[in-house]
Image (cartoon, rainbow over all chains, first blue to last red; front, side, top):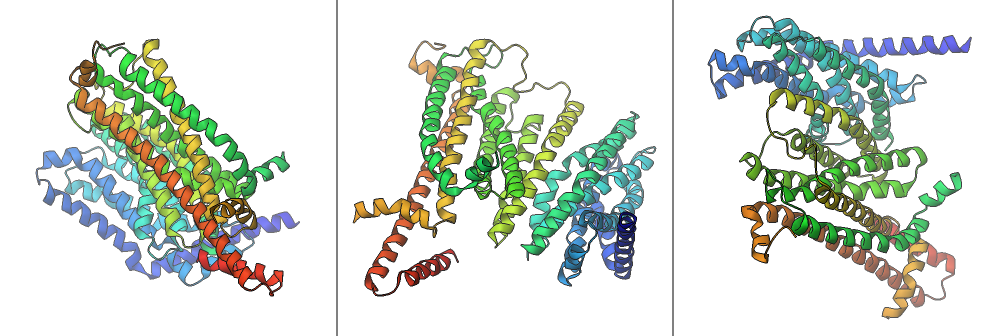
Length: 232
Length: 250
Length: 83
């Protein structure tokens, strides 16, 4: 039964990649905490730069929280494949008999678990500081959790394309930010709709649809990009 | 079919056939652009609401069409290059990107200028202008990525992947920006959406659009030929090609 | 004809700065693009011509060298120019 053996092999490989990346990242707690601190810092800048007036802040809070979370997620992207590229374990991943798309997806899942999800859980706290109107906190966290998953997937394509370049950091944001705009529109839109008392299910459904598209297509682009960066 | 594709992929064959095709497209572009400009500027009636500022439509809309079409052609060329390893496709994609960015800039500039008499401001976050701005960023990303690699093959493949990712995203970006715009500015006047456009107005527009497309094809043929010369400068057939002329200039 | 006179045509019903700047920038850009493409093509052709002439001079200078060696020279020259 070679077929079953192969599938089992893939699940084992994906699980092993997941566990390895989780262990590695949890060992470097700084890398997990930095985006969160960055998120909080950026949110602190806005009342200082604009106005501490709660009424004004309440109006712009959904957009600010979403933009700051998006930037924090972007900041963490560069390290997604960097250390694996430097120590050569990315080449091992390429040589593995299991499909690279699945292994890449496992790495992205870890990235979301340790960046997107914490950002989503932290956002309501910062929402309180920005006088975000009540009733939108759950939607904020949910939209960020859904949205950052898409952001991690799209961003991983850019990270894979630029991992072989010496100074890929700024280029990475140039490549990835335009692609983030639909997620930003519907993510921030969901929070705004919740504040206005409109239904949020349409927004969340579209965010889910975007995530579904990204889940289907992004792994292949990530795999192709990694091959270019390593072999090229 | 396969033989044809591989023949098409041969730079030498492409160099020859494009030399024959090129003059026709240049002639068509010149004829259509001159006709369309004269008609659009001098003969088309003024708009009942916007007056003569409406004549900006004859450069704005063709440029915006072309900006989107060039991105799609670039992604298709990238796909052809990735699947069949046809180098000419990648050369075409490489020369399309700057033209696409230039057309996006024209669409943005003419849209901004048009905004002054229409909205009383240089910039409005209008749905069309916003998606054009994002498209410009996408073009700049592809150009920057191609320039960032030292190996030409990696640069080609990376730019192809990014163009394909971008082209899947363009409709998503366009629809989400439209949706966002209608949500935030429901009662604003949009530049080019008018239900009934008389034939004297849209016929010159159609001519201008065709002229811009001919220009794009002619320029892409010409610059792909240059790109072939650049990349194959040490091939024997290129040397044989210029030898006749070398004899003359001696 | 939508205008009665040349001066009216140039004035564009008071919208002259907008219409003519949008059209002007577009025309200027298209002309510049064509000019640049022509100059680029001519320059590349001249480059190839110069290379052919140089190779011919080299092979004429060393006519006793077998043809295989001459070809090897040309390949080497190509690689160096690429770098």
